Image (cartoon, rainbow, N blue to C red; front, top):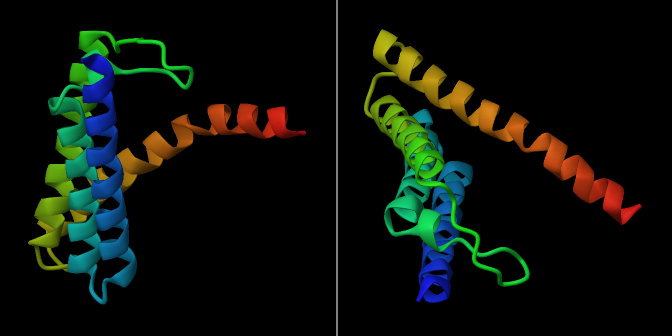
Amino acid sequence: QAALTWRKVVRIKIVGQIIGLTRMVAAKTTEGVMQGGAILMGSLVLFFLAGAGRSRHDGEGAWIPIPSNVSTMATSIDATLCYAAFVASRSPVDSTKFIVAASIYSVGTAIGALEGIPKFLKVLKGLV
């Protein structure tokens, strides 16, 4: 059952990310970019709420659940970033509300991206 759940939640995540990124790229306004960010982060929240933590599998198919405290923390951070992007998408660009919400979203996603650099470098090193 865990393998089926994992397959389902990964699909939710990927589809949501594609929709969110497409919205961001196709956006003609800041509102559209932030809506895409909210969709993208919302897909990550759904990913965890649908059971990703308890059903995770590695590349070899072995069941390796994420500890519940880590899963809860990731869900909370993703929900905060989703909400920040949503608030920014609904706020005038020249408002303090937009600046604060967009900053929270931008810094939070940048930190997430920077955390992935060591893993990315290991993959590159393995290709050489």
